[in-house]
Every structure is written in structure tokens, then in C-alpha cells.
Amino acid sequence: MKRREFLLGSGAAAGALGLGGFALASGPQELAIQPASFSLREQVTEGMVSLSPDAPPPVLYGKQGEVMRLPVRNTLPDYTAMHWHGLRIANQMDGVPYLTQIPMGEGETFHYEFTPPDAGTYWYHPHCMTMEQMAHGLTGVMVITEAEDPGFNSEQVINLRDFRLDDAGAFLPAYTPRGAARAGTFGNVHTANWMQAPAYDHAAGSLVRLRVVNTDTTRIYKLHLDGAGARIIAWDGHPVEIDVPMPSANDPLLVGPGQRVDFAVRMPESESQTINLMAKLPGQPMRAMARLRALGASVARDLRELSPLVANPVAKPNLDNAQLHEFVFGWTPEGGEPNNGFCGSLGYNFWSINRTPWPGDAAQDVGPLATLEMDKSYVLRLRNESPNLHPIHLHGLAFIPIKSNLRTLPPLMTDTMLLLKDEVVEIALVADNPGDWAFHCHVIEHQKTGLTGFIRVV
View 1: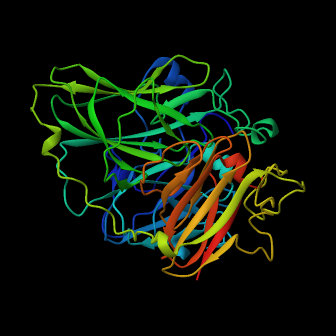
View 2: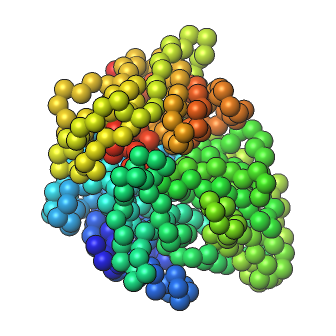
């Protein structure tokens, strides 16, 4: 694909709110998966330019407890399906090909309809032809607003991701065998909302909700805020109910692919002062990924004015009677080309769960990694037997980390657990959403080369 053929887009362009996204009406609002025109390399080298409405993909807004209707139309010759990452919705709406739906061919529409039970920051991406479509831009943010306004003056969404481009701005191969067998194939152009260090204006002295989402296929970010009075208020969509230390340059926050963090930020008092979202990338100096710039006279807000976020209605596990299941993540002891049907294959296996690689999206007679009974509590022991980090994502359910052999983990509700090298983590959950739920690494090359499976709740 050439540089102007990013897979972005929405048929709802009339509702555009710039980088703020699309405010969805109560009725259906079609999303079209289509080529989009956006010259990333020119923009990065020449500075910010106006974005077309379909680059980057729109921020989708819904409201907790209210129905969302999202017909997705595929205009591409490749098959696709859309997954709503982190949402605890009905299994048939989860967007995983062959597991929850048949993938969409060219010209077909799938009518997604669900009622988000949880407020917070989420995102969406394809779960078919995953590597290619995500690498070419099809990763968008979804915001589910609370029933009660917590009191911010404004908010800012930051979508972090890399692209792999050559010197002429054309796409390089999205993946390599060497990358897939290691930490993944990294991009060489680092962006926030498809731009290099963009600056966004917010009223001086105001309170801003900063929603940071890592939609990369590979990159694990080490993040902190520079020049901010701020606190962490949500992690992976769910309100933080304990004090979590703010990250610093010496102790940054690890945010893996699929993970999200929400900050409550007080803007500086004086016009043109900035708060910087900083990232440390391997072998490179610290860089500002995005900036919040104070504008106008101070409105003199205070972080203490904000109402605490109301906890989402997630059942808390009972550890006294929780059953244990163990999962080992590591290299595969066997090769063979996976059978991925219409949803693409990298052509090889490197990874496995419980020493068995995923045989492919369209493989027949594949059973669950574990079967859980409805409304019972479980502890899942996740063992990383590799030197690489793995962000392990569980669809349809939320869980709490309770123990690690390497670090102290705050008990923050989540859907994606970043496993460090040689780490063993125990997570706890209530199996309260029936269906077959994908369970995989969110380094997409790892997912597509064996490190995936599913958990069944009955």
C-alpha cells in the first residue's frame, strides 16, 4: 500500500468535531472501512496540517447505559470485523471472526448494537486481517461518558502509535519474521493522533481530562507528564479507587498495546505554558509525544473541585472460593502454518499458550483454553516463559491483578495485563459474561503467530 492509502474512515463525516471525534446520535451512524487520504511523512516533516475527517479514525462517543448502534460497512477487497476493545458487551457483538461472527466481505455491513455497562476510555480495531489493517491506520478511540458529569472544563484524546515508512513516505512491510519471533516489528515514525508532537489549546487554569490510548501493534510506551499538576483517575477504562503515584522521568508508566490511562490535569496559569506528554523510546532521548498549551486568562480551577469517578458495575471476585487456572505464554514447540481462513496469516508460528500454538482463526474443532462457570470467581495464573513482554488481553470480562513474582501491582480493574520478562502474575475475575472470549497477546505479531486462544464462560 502507498502512503495515501491508510485504512481509515467514517461515513459520518458531517458530524466531525475535528480531533475531538464524532458525537454519535441515538440512531445508527454508519462507519465505513475505506481507504483514506493522508500523507503522514509530509505532515511529520513539514509540521501540522489540517486533517481530513477520516484521518485518524474518528473518536466515537457513547454514554454509559445507553444503546449504541454502529453499522460497519466494509468497502475493502479484504475481509474484516470490528472489535470494541475493553467493552463488556454481548458476545455476538465482540467482533472476532469465526468465534463470534463471520468476517465481512467487500460491500457487506455488520450491524453492531450494544449498551456499554461501563464508562471510560476504550478503543476499536479490526480482528481480521489484523496486522495489515491496524498497521495502515485502522485504530480508533472510543469514549463512553459517565452518567454524571465529573466536572472537567474540557478533555483531550491522545492516540499513540507508530507507522513504518520509507524515506519516500511509502509503507514498509508491517511485520517481519525476525520481529514476530522477538518483541515485534517496530515503526519508525512516532505519532500522537497521527502527528508529531501536536499542541492542543485548553483554557489556562482549567481542568482537562487527558485520555491516552496506546493503539500500536507493538510499541510499549514509558510515559510521564512534564510540567503538570495532575493525577491518574482511570486505568484501562475503569476509575482508580486508590492513590496511584504519578509517573516521572525516573519512574515512568508502562503502557502496553491496548492499554489506556486517564489523567486529571490542571492547566498552567499563564498563557502559552505547556504540559507535555513525554515518552522514553529505546535508544532515543526523551521526547514530547503531545502538548497541552494554556490559552487566555486563567479560570482558576482546582483539582479538588472534581467529583470522584463512580466505579463501574464490575463484580468483585471472592478469593476465598476462587478456582485456579494456569496459563503459560512462551515459544511454540512446533511449527506449521496456521489456518486463518479469510483473515490472513503471517505464515508461521513462533508463540503458544500452554505450549500449543493457536491453529488459526478458521481452524476446526478447537476447544477453549479453560471453561468457566457463570458468576463464579476465578484466579488465572499467567506465566511468561519468554524474555519478551506480552500485553495479555481478555475480551468481554474485566479482572484485577492480585500478585506478581517481580513487583507490587496496584489492584486496578483492567482488561489487559502487561507481563514482564519471566513474570508470573495472578489475576482474579468473576465470570459474569457468557460466551467464547478471545484471550491473546496484543503485540499483534505474537497474536498472529500462535499466542492466542479463547476462554469459554457457560
